[in-house]
Image (cartoon, rainbow, N blue to C red; front, side, top):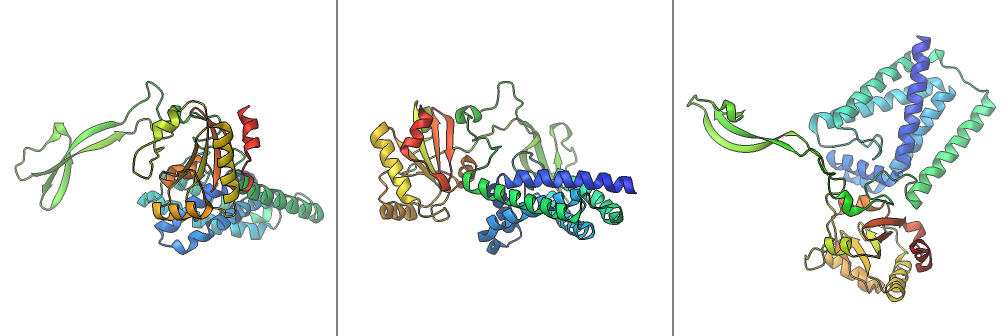
Length: 371
């Protein structure tokens, strides 16, 4: 039992630290996943606190792993781990059964797990944590109390700093398809020779109030079966391009996606998922940057948002913005940059640099990256 307990302690501790660090690297992205769960469980009143909750969960998860490896507060930590894994096992089990949440967000965008895979992962962790819970008497502190306290305080300080830093100044490691260096146009297509969706034609017949599905080779001869419908059924999913929803439109509904991506040279893009949800007080910097960009570089300044036209026009008038906004769905806007607002520098259709709301650049800073 002692060997199993020690193995479980090390495995679970390391996994919790890795999982927590990946989520802490992108707390805003993790908060989007929490909001998705809030919507599924009809708890929208938690949505305004999603970012704070995401930060707390990341720090808590990492600290549980650190404390487990240090062997400190073994009994208390075993209880916390057990309660936490029971909760997440129920949550991922519900997702696996209903399919209402496509990804648990356990490892952020670094490792995408299907609901059933997340559920199996939590079942394995549940077994390992049960071993820890049962064999908790075999877990002893690795260091004396003084050094353990220093190690825990240092870990908490570093983890907290990292979590707030990535929230304010963008993820240290970007796992999204819009990361710096990626060509958006290239990511909108699958590589040549990639598998495509495999579909099969299905015929639906009804009998005695029940529906039955048949393929082309097994259509029933029994006249008691009544034809009802025909549909195409996905048998094998093919390649899906990493970027498939990058589309922008002007106020009249005219699409400008190709205009943006096919325009050669540098372009500066302001991204605001929702103008009423972003960090306020940055409007003067945004206006100054846009004016300097258009007047000095003689290039167009682009602005993307999912906000409605009436709200948008009032916002533009209030802040005296001379540039127009283009409409884009908020799903890709969330992925383009983990900040609201955020600035992106592109050359042709390749992303060169990103800046978050807490370090919006001046024109001179942008110019350095262009050179």
